[in-house]
Length: 268
Image (cartoon, rainbow, N blue to C red):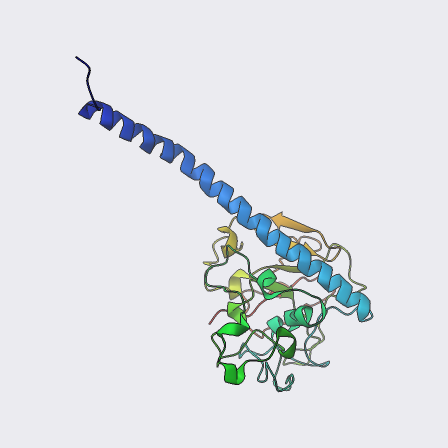
């Protein structure tokens, strides 16, 4: 007589087989997803690098730096007049306001500053801001929001930038990236683990990429996924200035032209 359906034993075997297949395939699927996120992040940084190079060409070799000479990196995390009132840098600028110059003058869009693997970061969107304080367009703003908006600069930018300011609170000179910097100088990367609430400082690699490494943009425009943080000139640690660690917001400047020091705003 013809039998319909499965026996209990056959069903258990099928379930166990599926479970075993998932157990075997899950690491590969996670690896594929991680690889896709790294590629998307790399694409973002390639675009940012091209915009920075074009900006430097138009500004006598100067890379994006918000504020006049002598401006310091604010510990507040935002500038006081981010929109409609003109830029205000008397009390400091943000790293993100330097990035924002690429929106104003480089054709970069807010989504290019968001790594898809960076938890808690969202794309800056004017439509979500109260109309009473919303600029008419992205080109009427000078940063990615402030404390009065749904956005804080640190919530909208996944990337760190070589410390761009010439002076810190002790009046010491800095060494920002410029047209004379060596081609292999690191310019940008994923978030500095010391300045990332998602990092645990375990191996000082990016939290956005499961601490397996970080995408690093170099001055010559190429981006490489580095599995170690000592990838500056001469094997320099890109997250610290000199031999000092750890670092905090507003702290320190590069100690010489070979010292990479990539920093970012922290998330709110």
